[in-house]
Image 1 (cartoon, rainbow, N blue to C red):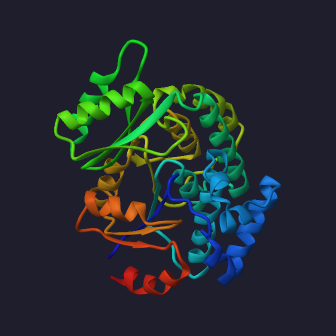
Image 2 (cartoon, one colour):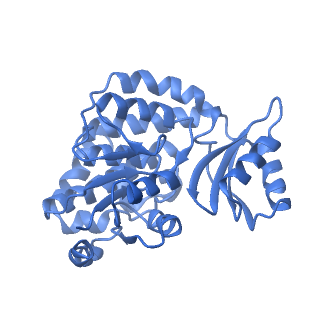
Length: 313
């Protein structure tokens, strides 16, 4: 029996126009965007559909915008009778996964990720931190590079284990730049600076973690209705308290996406992954992690026609 995972993208998948096709085609999607606008008391849907891109790229806007689009698509799938066996999300995407698994209220999730974005942006002044993707070295090699590039006052750490050949580093700008040079010297195919405004998922995010923790503590969480593999531990959370605590730790801890996908495939028997949200970043990463897995991106409603055959195998 085929097992289906719904996976939800994180920051970096945003673009003006996202979600508009779903909004125009499905009443449940329109209701979801209206709910998002009401929860944040602003026209978030207009920002998703029209931009401007510069405003959409601001972390405090990007995070609720991607969550709203992903939830609109997930609810449309549910209304059409499609339900996952497992859910997971990449970084921010874990909030979308929790909403899809009925573990977190949508309005609460929107307000939390708005606060999360604001806290992450405020944790490190613009220009102080940086992130870079290292391609062509394995995770242990990148970890060694990050440690070697760190100094007593400047830190570099692994932020995202994205695929066997792509690992993202984050930290102080000078340390990240040293790590990029060192990675190339040690055989990396490429070392690419990322166009982000803060060093996410690094120890420099500690102030954001401390600011978000009490807000998470004041929010109600339930046990997920289906297994939810959290990316800080790469294994399922058992109850609402564990889900909340994982969200606290992921702010300044690495995204273990490679291990999360392998757990879903090897331990939970998942053989099909549906990316629920804008873009197809996760589909690309999953194919590199588990080449035999089947993937389908549902960024646009036209893809829905292929879902029935995809689920049936």
